[in-house]
Structure formats: C-alpha cells, structure tokens
Image 1 (spheres, helix red, strand yellow):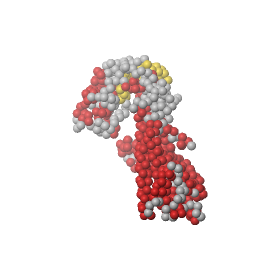
Image 2: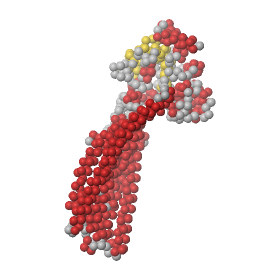
Image 3: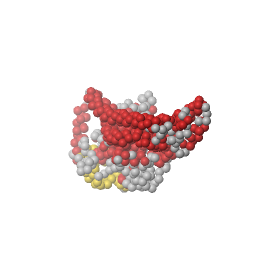
Image 4: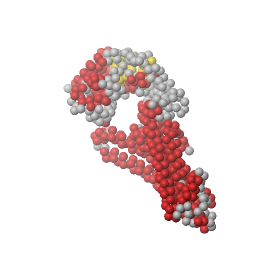
Length: 639
C-alpha cells in the first residue's frame, strides 16, 4: 500500500537502535510467556478440586508447559487450603514477573521512539537550513512549523506505541491461540468465526483514517500559517482595525479543522464498539459450546475457565487493533507530508556535492560517524567540491548575466559589470528595477539564469557556499533580529567573539551611543524581531552584525533608509576607512548616501542604462539626474 511505503524513510533510523529494539521485543515475548501462566494456574486450581481432572494437562505448550506441570505436581501433593494458597502465590508471582517485563518493554521501545523522534526532528531542521530561498517561497512558515511539531508527534506515536502494541498483539495471538487450540481445536475455530468481520471493519476504517488524517494535518498547517501571520503582522491588523475580520477568518478555519477531526473521531469511535461487539459474540459462543464440551467430558471445567480467560486476554489485542492501525495511518500520513519536504533538493548547492536527504541522522554526522562513500544507506554527505579559498579579495564580475524568479520572465537582462577590489559601488534606480535581485546573486541566494558571475576570477558556482558567504557581509532592506540579547545579535555571524569586537562594530554603525542609554546595554533582550528597538536602531544593529565579520565584500541593501541624514553621514565616513581595501555595494534611494561612491550603476527594467560617478551622471541628464532633481525638490518642499 502506498501509505505504508511512505514509512520506508524510518527504516534508515533503525540500525542505530537495533539493540534496544531487540531487547524490547524480547521483553514482549517474556511478558506474554508469563502472562500465560495465570490462566493455567487457575485451571489447575479448579481441576485439583476434582480428582478425575487432576492429571489433565490439555493446553500445555512445550518448554514453559514443563515448568507449569512440575509446579502443579508439587502443589497437588499439599492439603487443600495450602494447595489453594500455593496456586494464589503462583498467580501473583507470574503477574509480577509479567509486569516487570511489561515495564521493561515500554522503557526500551517507547524511549527508543523518543530518540528516533529527536533524530528525525534534527534532520528535518537541518534539511530546512540547507534549502534555497525559492523553497521558502513555496512553503509557508506555518505549514513547516506544523510538520515539525504535529506531524512529528504522530510519527513518534507510530514508532513507539504502534510498534510496541503491534508486536504485543501478534505475539498474544500466537501464544494464546496456540494454548486455546491445545485445549480444544473445535472450540477455538468456533470463537474465531467473527475474525473475518473484524478484519473487514478494520481495513475499511484504515482507509478513512488515512485520508481523514491527511486533511486534518493540512487544516492544522493552515491554522498555523494564519496564526503566525497574524502574530507577525499584529501592528498592521490593529492599524487597519481588522481584528474582528481576522477573528472570523480564524473561527472559520478552526471550525473546518474541528469538523475534520470529528470525522476521524466518529470513524475511530465506531471501530472500538464494533470490534468489542464481535468479541462479545465470540465469548458467548465460547461459553455456550464450551459448556457442552464440559458436559460431554471432552474438556475439564478448569480448561473451560482457562479457555475463557484466554479469550478475555485476547480482548485488548483485538480491540487495540483499531487503535494501533489508527496510529499507523496517522503516522504514515504525517510521514508522507515530511517526505514531501525531504524530497526537495536545494537549488543552490556545491556542484559536485552528494546530497542525500535523511539517510541516517544528524546525530551521527555530529559524532563524525559518516561514511564518505555516498552509497545508499549511508549518512547524509555534503562535501565541498573544491578546497576552501584562504581569502576572497572582492573582485566581482558580471558577464552577460540574466536572471528571473520564474522561467521566461527575466528580472535582470544581459548585465555586464566589473567591480574591482576596494571599490565602493552604488546601485540606484526606480522601484522594481532589479537592484536587490542583482546583489542577491553575489552570495548565491539565487543562481544566475544565464551568463556567469565571477569572484576573484572564479565562477561563484565553483566556490564552496560556506567559503563564499563567510567573506560576505549582507544587510538586507528588511532588518531581522533574533529574540536574544543585542550583543548576541551583533556577534551572530561569529563562532567565537569578544565584547571588544561588538564594541568596534557598534561604534562604526553609530549604535554604541544609543546602547549606552539602555539599562542593560548589550545584554538587553530585544524581543521578537527586535521589537524593543526603533527602525533606525534595527538597521544599525544589522550593519554592525555584518561589519563584525570584517567581510571582504559588504552589501548594504537600502540599509540606511530609517537612519537620519546626520547619522548616515557618520556611518558612511566610518565605513570609508573600514572598507578601504574591501568591496562595498550600496543600494539606496537617497542620492546623498551614494554620491561619493567610486562607481554608480543605474538600473532600469533589469538593465544597466547608466554608470559613472555622481558628477558624470548628472551631466548625462538621464534617470540619475531625474532622481537627483526630484530629491532636491522634495528637500526644498520639506524646508
């Protein structure tokens, strides 16, 4: 079945935990073996009161039956009261030992399921980290969060309780049915007459549960997405007074989620009573026909009591079939959703890397137990195609570069540009001209569609991603800060850092004066997305974060838009000294920000239409001159 095929991914995690799983299965076997003893001792206790039945050994399995017979032979030599006390003690001891093995069974299999869940969650997160930007345009944040939480919980339930009770159910049937057949084959066949009906009920329910759980998880993803968007955009919602509208949207989606869950509840709720009813019919048939066999002298009264006790023992495994198969269907549906993510291959990767998503575990990679042969069944390998460069100098060249987010719709067309090490290059143009798209190609957030982008004479696609991005400081037009301290945010790009590094970068970004006024200075917790900082402070913090790495290439994508002109001049003056031998690309809508650049590029509709210095572009009287004139006019009107 296709839904079961989805579970093949989990098989790759089993080898690391084969010993605890084998111990768990062994505990299940021992639990069942000792659980069989109680009905046998009850049988012999009853038959010992009837001299004609005292030597009846129907229903004894080889091996364990020998032990039972020896105990029974000893107890039957005692007085009646002592004999009954002995049987009671034997029953209690067998129940205690069975309980110990049951506890051991749960401690091995359930604990292992938690560890596999841990590995799978690590692999899922690591896989997301490797994905290209286009992947995150395809899947929403809420959807990915739902897969990382709700779906993984369903998979863990499949690995743990479902596996444990599946083995338990199978072994219970094998052991108990074997003893029941030894007691009376005819009686056993009669009580099993309802089994085909149980199989039909369970099989039908499985199909409905699988499809229903897929719909439930998809609705949960939609709820997660809506919740995440509302919390992230709460300022916009309040500014436009859309609280009631969003509440109605959420209520509608929540109702659909509840309806899908109610369908599952109804299906699962119907399985248990139906299976229980069929099992009750088997019990009635067993008592009716078993009574006839006792009267006919074919079996003893003790064997009939033991037989019905075994039949009751089968009740939970039979009833649990529906629950276990429900867990399997839920888990396989969730695994199918995770597999869709694991099947995604990052578009941006080192060209000769071996990329095998989820082949073993992130833990094994961290422990350096990763075979490097790339064979099926080995751990994930992402190996650099080339030796990392010692240092990227910062010489950038675009050769006939074209790029588009969608095939056939280019955003950049035939870009030819040479930026030499140490140059400060500004990129300007009307909104939508392709400025951000151009600089996104340098750290390979996206790959060129046509042409070639070279750094230090090497195609960027032939430079290991880790090496390339390590030497680039990138400040996007939307500053993002994490919910931790300001100092940690600034030092985010470094594995090891000193406070002096943070102070140095903050001073250049003109942030230190503001921080000195904070009660806890660099230990100030920023809150989600840096909510406690102003727009200008956020931008300066992200500039400091880029500078602290002392990059060979610094990219500022409209990174000074929220900063006042005076502070902007101070930052640019500091940057000139720091970036003297480094390459700097600045995107800005303010002419004052870029007028002193060594080279100014003007983009229009994805093409370079003008380039030169500030004075030469003014003299051209083109787009740049138009932008400059409009800004001068705006400033005069403001005055």
